[in-house]
Amino acid sequence: MVIQEALRLYPPATFVIRQALEDIDFKGIVVPKDMNIQIPIPVLQQSLELWGPDAHEFHPERFANGVVEACKVPQAYMPFGIGARICVGQHFAMAELKVALSLLLQKFSFSLSPEYRHSPAFRLVIQPEHGIRLRVKRL
Image 1 (tube, one colour):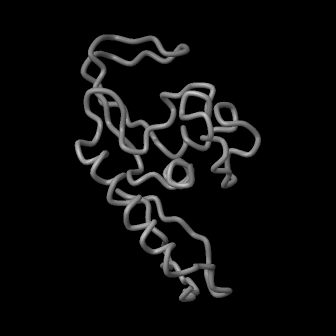
Image 2: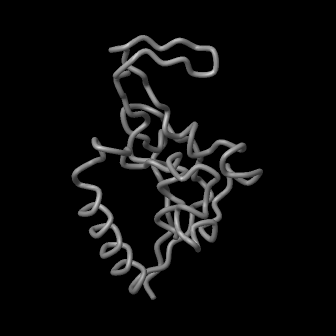
């Protein structure tokens, strides 16, 4: 749940691009066939309308019953993309993340340094603009 919530707030990619396969009328906006559409992942994954009034806050328990129950529209959760063009490395990345995180948490505790400045930079991938300053304590 912690990993899913972290990926919801800070997905690896800033956007995905899809091409319209036919002319589409989306709420009065005409999208012609073959036009590329950028889907801003952070906007979808932090939408108050889709995720509720605490959409900008870190609440891992929202995933207690899975992605389907976490959001009004489960397809709005797409940290690795969605559909036929989902990231092929998604399962490997998740497994690697779980193993690394569990090994680190067995031996260390982490807290943010007072010098830490929260400033995510939305580029091709989302990254901390000023780095992440952590206090690490051996258990």
